[in-house]
Image (cartoon, rainbow, N blue to C red; front, side, top):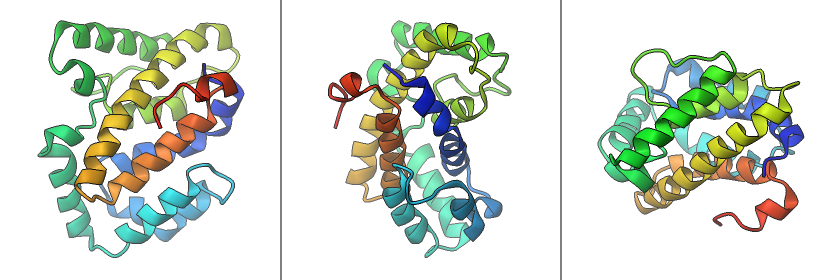
Length: 192
């Protein structure tokens, strides 16, 4: 179960993850970005700092190429979180519909052709969704979304580690943030 208070405290961090997991732009890597959004108390700080340091060794062109090679050309490192479990099966379509309903419940539509399980979109939702004051309605939907993200990022992290990708540190930081947002009893039952 999600601790909604902790989730609210981490909203800014989910915005950072959304930004870093979309196609890279120069402003995303400005030195002030990490300094303004993360401090040493954030659960993601250490792995994200490692990711940040490594990425700053690359040129912008190299970062763009790394992103495309990692997320666009490798099926095992897709950013579509239900793909790992359902691939293109009917169950995936049902899960995508449930996730889309969550976005709509909070007045946030999906622009363009992205699917509702796209990790940057899910992070952006956790950052921007106005669920405070609607905790009872939000709890089930947010628990579903976090479960999909936790399961998908588990498989994504394993693939990124296998590829020795710096994005593995970023995804590890995201997973550390998930764990910080769980109730104590739920945290002991999640993937490592």
